[in-house]
Image 1: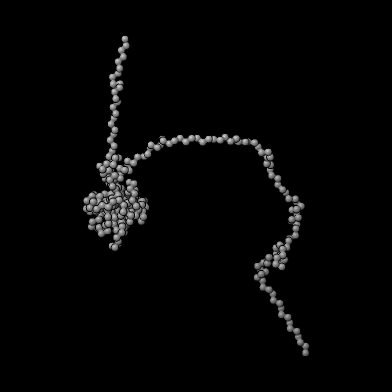
Image 2: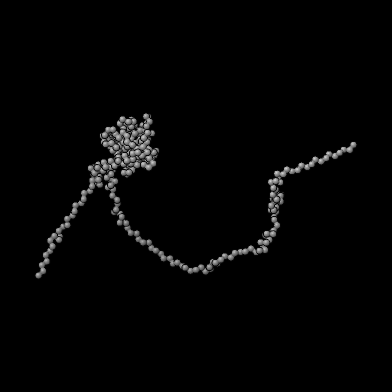
Length: 276
């Protein structure tokens, strides 16, 4: 006798592994965004400090040729895909305004021009000091005659305190997470409808040869020798123009010596002798 015993647990449900938790930087939570912002601000400051010593160059945006103040800020933030204008007059309007006491690394500090009567933006830099730290230090591309290159200066106790205008914040929490969490659309890759093939019309091709074949060598018309001899022995033709007759025969050229030779004057005739 054969006894068939069913296997135990054959119809038991298969356990499903729990889904992995989504990182906070991808969900846009405040904690993850704050961590991403802090790391990004430190990276911006470190990259800006690495450009110290680069010479000042008007309208420059590269460490190879040099920087001006707004070109240095443009180059530094472009490294982290943060768009800022290449104009100090426009930097006063980017981001969000913050109090001077709340300035933190990665903020943009804007100053007026060097003239004592200037009231418009003329210079800018990137804050490198910690929040609430005094003095407020910043890295910038200086155009001074003594040190025209990228360096670090402070606001308090310098002429920059008189020229101080505003602090602008372009790195806000959540900007880095949004850039990472942006998915690429893949649902429409395989949903395209197939295009029907167009009908093809077969056209017969004839290979018949032409009825009259072109000659292999073209005939050349030759001029009789008698006509050529007559052309050579023909007399020169004279042309009449404005009442004068001109001959086609070339005239004899007068040499330079003959033209330079003075003409002989006729000898004076003897006066007739009167007879008395």
